[in-house]
Amino acid sequence: MKGNILIADDEDMIRELINITLSKEGFTCFQAGSAEEGLDIINSQQLDLALLDIMMPGRSGIDLLKDIKQVTPDTTVLMITAMNDMDTALSCIHNGAEDYITKPFNLDRVLLTVKNTLEKRRLIMENKEYQANLELKVREQTQVIRAVMGEINQAYEHTLAALIRALDAREKEVGSHSERVMAYTCLLAEKAGIGPEERIILGKGALLHDIGKIGVSDNILLKPGKLDDEEWNVMRQHPKIGYDILAGIKYFTDAAELVLFHHERYDGAGYPHRVAGEAIPISARIFSLVDTLDAMTSDRPYRKALTFQAVLDEVVRCSGQQFDPKLVDVFLSIPKEEWEKAAGKTL
Image (tube, rainbow, N blue to C red; front, side):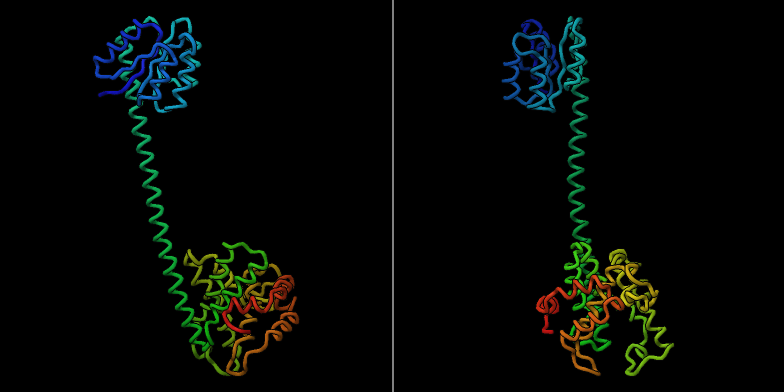
């Protein structure tokens, strides 16, 4: 079966001539003497092509064309028109008709036009199906890629979290300093109005802030006494070392900024670049505050953990020097209970 065709024309002889011609070629034809009959056939049959006479009593072929394009837009339409009605035929093409046939017509010409039109429709439908299948395959592959990337990102995070715990243990940190400051950073960033996506980046940077210490020898890093000038010069390189490590990994490129600037001070007396004020990225300005919070409220070999009130006093004292005054105000507005919830410990 080559296809289903509607022939809508109010002249019985014309319908029958077209029907005989197309049926001999293997097409299945449905005849309608009016637009109303044609619409009934459209609603009950799956059509590939419709031949519509423009001038019919009652609703015209143009009305039926509009019905077809609304009900079954993939059905191709050819208009049948008299030679003196070419303008109307051309307007039908603007309304979705593929082409037109003029009366009186040559039946061989009609057959050729129908075959060519249906071949064109077949190619269009095949292309549509191909595009639909392609889009489905792209969506499926995209889901697979996202799943794989999620697994890779998780592997990055788990591996580096383990590395950070090892670095914390190397410095004999109690608990996980890096994971606490990550939680503190996200809390202060949220209160400062930073959006969720940026907070994720800040959290990564906070977790990895000291990764550059992997390039500092134990003789310096674990020295019980004060560092001399040469040793301090080595120690001050760890933000740059950490930045260089992370900047080469696309997943951590944005987080690397916090790592590079996390020892800068608001007054410009920090390291390694001695930048000041708002030239320091806000991620590092936030981190400076929460790093102090964790350092002061954690036990050290040379002292016990200080009180939360001692932290507040220190933050106020160093506002405008070590810390950004605007962020100090945000820091002070956060109740102790929220800091404790973030850290998972009592302060």
